[in-house]
Image (cartoon, rainbow, N blue to C red):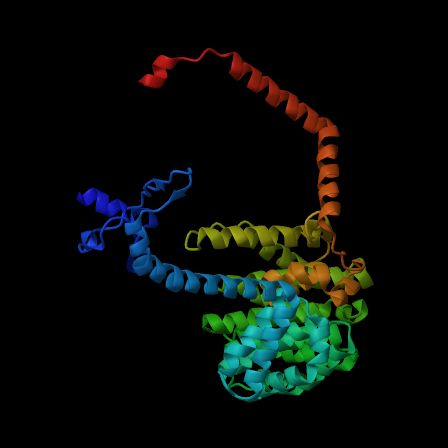
Length: 481
């Protein structure tokens, strides 16, 4: 028997060599040498009886009892068992919806944290990320006590990783149960602890960053006390005033984390100003604009941009109370904004210059011309898109704060979070549509595009191009070359 024929009669599976059934008439001793497997399958060789039926030869029957039984009884059963197990798992996964699976995993993470069976910060981060991606308001209401105990214990631990994870979880929980009484419970439980961490000079900038965000979001969505709102603003202001220059006019040299903490404090203070009365902002406008005007000279780009946006917001809110409001040093402010909007110093990075110019041009238009760009965002499932217009600095500031806390989950929460939809008057959440309705909606959209004059003209131009290409003679000489 040739070497090629031997290769054609064997195949490998899971590291084992097996003989094909159509080659069983060959004596097994022919296969003592095991060459490399060949992927080509030979045609079956059978013997024909007198009555016309087909069967294997006697030698193949004898060998089938030795080799094929090992394959059929051993390997085939194991493969079938694996397939059956996979089918069972798929059926179980299909029986449970995605929401139920997420809730099940969250319960397991909560139990691990409460039983101290794993690292607290990793499981708390997992809970926060899951709540960013999904709106699980009923689950949070049912398990609020356990989640609140996890948040408080994480923040009180004193470790930076636990403080950051606990503060971020509290922020997402408050957003998930926004405008419900449970959000106020969470805010009241974390308010004194977070305020103490922000006021503590020994706390790390990263901890203060997350705590200031949690404090501002909680106060924005859950606080109804005006005096407490003012105290929170003073607490946040105590952070970013540390970037002001000293008596000699020299700015402090801070780390990147410290600058990011001060930027977050400015944004969070602006977020709370959006829910204050215009009269209160008008009374304190000159003081706020003077602080932000000083920060425009800071060497860190993020501080300059945050200060410019804060000035535009103060002007917008103060002019709601008095349309003729202007800072007493308005000429100096206009000159500083113009320099930043046309800055071309070569020691700055091109990307930083582009971002700075774009921001301060918009700030100048809003202050001098009282114009603001109308930014629109779209969210919602396909065929059920909604438009949300950001045509004021208030809405831009609020959207920026929510997007920073929810990251990529901002679209999901604006679509299905009832609290946020009630806050911005977006109406009830969209209902799930079945496959037939979705198909009909897509067909209607296609028909509308066909009826549209622009679409009709585009189709006609494409048809002309196709007709011209078909009429062109084909040159085979160029193709051969």
